Length: 486
Picture 1 (cartoon, one colour):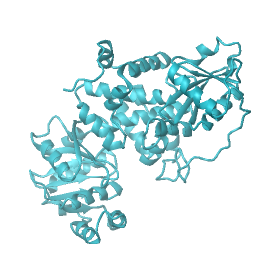
Picture 2 (tube, rainbow, N blue to C red):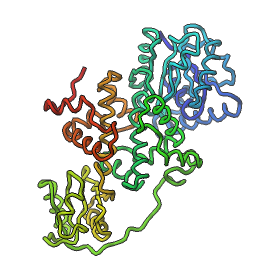
Picture 3 (cartoon, rainbow, N blue to C red):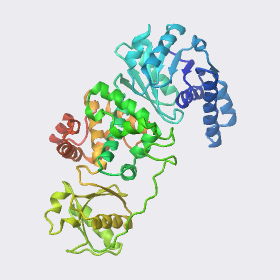
Picture 4 (cartoon, rainbow, N blue to C red):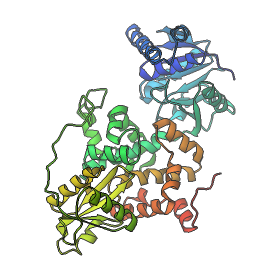
């Protein structure tokens, strides 16, 4: 099917961005809002977005005029009667969407495809409310729509043959990479992303590590564009809470139950950037805190011969001396640090160290670690150019505790037949701006390392979802280093 005339219902930031994407690709667009005031806001979104593109040299002024000239704005849904496709971008409330789709079903020609931009709600439920369920699909864009390259195209069990293919082809015409998936809560990106964000809130609430340290660990250590709390503020805590609720309703997996801390912030109206305050304050940055300075003295590095020798050499190059009776023992550990600490004459001196990439050092204090040793370890890491991330002595510390369950979820998604490895990797790279997809990460880290880390997490937390996916376990047992591509 050739799409030439498109309607967009709802011209908030997302809907206006979707309208702009279609107009940039040369399609005629009818944008619909509820009233004149909302329509004016939508026009403002379009003008600001295209204006910024001109300022950055990405559009010529004449091109901007052509794009805006292809968009007709109206408050009447009846103006959509002759379009080939309608995409809705109204609030994530199922009753609102069902009501809208019933009205669109009445207005539009029988052959018109109706698409929802929902990020988590059931496309099947929306389709079933119309007289054309076979021509209803999900077309989930990512914010900001003119910039983000991913579109999730969601078919249902009653979608007519060819409709998903036609919409996927349209996404390509828009310059997007389309990932075609089934109607499952969260689709690909949110189903993998939101549990990771929710888990970060749980770790902070448990006191494993602080907000700023968790964000720094994931941004600097893993290379993610934003830490989980900064990203939650950007997404909107209310949106994240709603998506987690939809995931939990479908899976009944307790890991998908929204974090109590998330619920508390949402109830208080602290929704992130949209309200001016969420996990961070209005400025979006962390408050400045002064770190206590310790008397830096001698050190000893133990564990992991090559990695330990490298850290010791960096410390010696910075002017510090190693000693058999050190002020602080830095243990590069592969099991709980406390198990090593209790073997020392003075366990208060030991701090666990996990080097993440070339910028981050996770520093795990045990129940016996002295404040002097913990502070000394932090200062030593800073002096050798590493960002210290203080945390409790828990399995996975911070990075592995957040990253490995996310990777495990991706393996389960693939093994269930829901999406291919290529589509899952593309979805997370393009939808989240990650430097690599989950399977690229898995194969880079080594399957055995991730499997063993998940086993440690399962032993520590007794969370069933942390048990290694059977496929991952089987591949490690078979000494296979890569996932089979189907």
